[in-house]
Image (cartoon, rainbow, N blue to C red; front, side, top):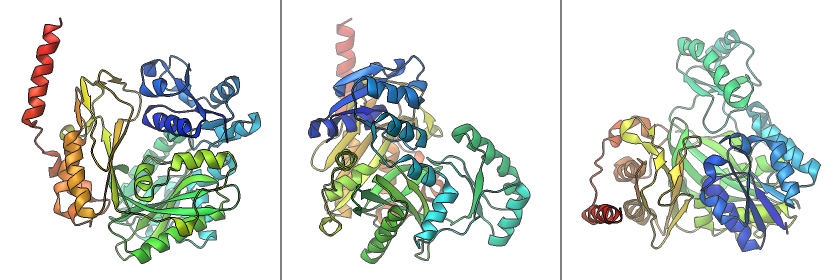
Amino acid sequence: MLKKVLIANRGEIAVRIARACRELGVRSVAIYTEADRYALHVKKADEAHFVGLDPLQGYLNPHQLVNLAVETGCDGLHPGYGFLSENPELAAICAQRGVKFIGPDARVIAAMGDKTEARRCAERAGVPVTPGTDGNLASVDEALVFAQKIGYPVMLKATSGGGGRGIRRCNDAKELQQNYQRVISEATKAFGRADVFMEKCIVNPRHIEVQVLADSLGNTVHLFERDCSIQRRNQKLIELAPSPQLDDTQRHYIGELAVKVAREVGYENAGTVEFLLDSDGSFYFMEMNTRVQVEHTITEEITGIDIVREQIRIASGLPLSVQQESITYTGFAAQFRINAEDPKNGFLPSFGRISRYYSAGGPGVRTDAAIYTGYTIPPYYDSMCAKLVVWARNWDELLQRSTRALEDMQIYGIQTTRHYYREILQHPEFRSGSFNTGFVEAHPELTQYSTKRRPEFLAAAIAAAIAAQSGM
């Protein structure tokens, strides 16, 4: 087992990793910039080290991170998600310095990070891919010719893209000409590469992904699927496990496809294979994320398998603690990304000080967060400030419990997406379990909700205000 792990990340995922380390008896080392001096992950780790005044650079310098790991006696480094989690350079430097990167090796990260190469890997594994270019586009003229061949609409995608960025839908030749340079510009700024490719646009598909685990001894398993169709501008909002839109035959089939992709590339550790499900029931490989996902929580809830714990075990050279035939799932789980945004105002970011925070609780409710009363959410990072995770025995019970949990959670001082999710839960299309990636765009009226507070919370707010004045 690894003895000491540097957590090369921040926020709730850093807290999550520190907790897994504590349970395994592994010491954890947090890092923080000036903006995160009072962050919760700094308090939860066994030790914490300052990595600079700049709010971002401290998390984005691979040499500095590995040097710190060596200096602090760490034999492992966990990248979390975001930042450098899918950066092959970080994994390569770890290997050079004798620090175990808790994830796949640099070769695999590079291969699956290149979307055109990832498509080729899937094809070699016999997994269906969306019709598209064999490689990168050389010019807008080539793009126009290929689009005419496969038919509009098409998707322009950054080859090194991720997180929903560097993607533009083009409904005709005019939009393709307008978007070509925009995608190149976005790709260059976000990923340092100007390469783009094209795929046929599957209109309003379901977005289904499969969690896989693979150890260094050749064992590869899947932990069933998650439905990530409720998303805005390619950014996931609500995730579900398992998908209420699949039957057992489809579930078994897509799980096998994910394992084939992982085995084809020699994958090791935790990863996610993402698919699009067309209206005719066809599955198409989209990409593979070579890291732990934000929504790994709901897979943990339905299977009882601690994915972060498995990551650390795998990196320690141990076999998977489960085999495919023993993996089952129970009930349904949902994850709500509580973002510091105002849905009523075009999802405008709402950073600032949290005056009061009450986490949700009760049976089947879990909150992964790095916020607390008095914490100031800095404007430099992703807007997600908490993850509300709900499990229930069946779909109807999940809807009821999720509604109650969203009401229980209270965050004052900033605007969040909490109220918006309650509106989604009440919509007949969502409640029926029949929705696609166009749901949010098709229902802008759901942002026109009431924020009237329940009497007990209003009374609590008045009491707190009185107490604050008395103490002055």
